[in-house]
Length: 495
Ligand SMILES: *Cc1c(COP(=O)(O)O)cnc(C)c1O
Image 1: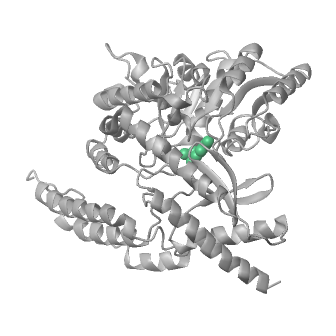
Image 2: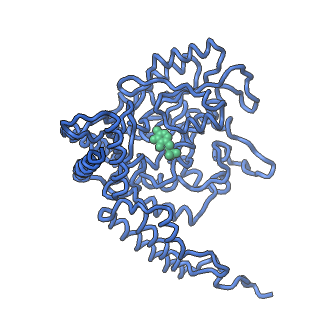
């Protein structure tokens, strides 16, 4: 039998070097044009699912294959013409950053080598790059650089890791079954904490009853007095508190809780202190915010999303745990078909023992590269710039009688449209602003999201975007005024 691959050319997944070079170069050229053209594009074309589906009709799963280059051309056209672009200078919705172009190239490099970063033996360089990236992130936020940690898909998974690790550390001894309790295992967090905690409670503890939502003060921070009262009450009731979540940049309005006070309460009652810094933790890099983030270093675990304020592509979240062995106690299981701890390989570098995943992709590469590209000072400037744009928006809204500036914390500005000099009630204002939000999101001119603060339906702009300028913020204000006026007139005419 001749030593050839029997698969016919047209069915091959393999590409020879020349094909790869041709198709790849063409794609890179198209991506470069796309990135350059971003500011002149609409933020989104806001197509509905039926419209998108109809565009997909020309893509088919045939018995016979198709040429890679043609497929790439068609796919890039489809995506460049019809996506929502969170890399657009006027995208400030939710908390999704403009991503560093270097990350796109890094992802291609990572995918080309395709290491399985679950075990050192399968990914020697990638594993150590991931460890180094985790140490750098810890260093940037002033956390213990000897901490354990790893990349996960995002904030939900990172917070789940902190939650489960805390529960394990407080309520179980390693490898043993849970210490029996009669009462509830309880986690505490501020009202307004991201909905990951609902999922975590459902998945890992007793459901909604195992979360104690603590009211916030007028400044939006969790009331530590109420927190302590609730813990005492639950202990008296023989329930089992195990974890307190503090926000370092809450999802709705960017509030940072009083981290050192929460840390002291956790210490006093023997609870795990978890910080949800998915969005805000990178701001701890700024010297001028040291007071705000005081106590972050005391956290037992911190969730932080590089795909938010470190400007990485999706997906990149990470969890840092002050003492690495807690992760291992929680997640380490081995099997006789694993030969991962051969001589010279310290088990500390087999990431499958430190998190929820087994096979793992090389998320770290892009983050590792972009941290080096911009350096600490580059990150300081970009983060500072985002905060100052949020401040600028807040100032413009404050100075405009058609607007109500609600809050600005870190790089999140919350505001709403309020027709001046008119007697309208809260219900009307909520309807007006909700309609306004939907109009803005569909327009493709700007993209903001919403927040409901004390019953007020508000617009919310979150700046995690190194492409935004002051002129974009001015454009946002003008667009809100123009559209707000139109919608107000329309709603009035329907009354
Ligand atoms: C975004 C966010 C999350 C969830 O992160 P994902 O990456 O979307 O899973 C959790 N907490 C906070 C504070 C967030 O901002």
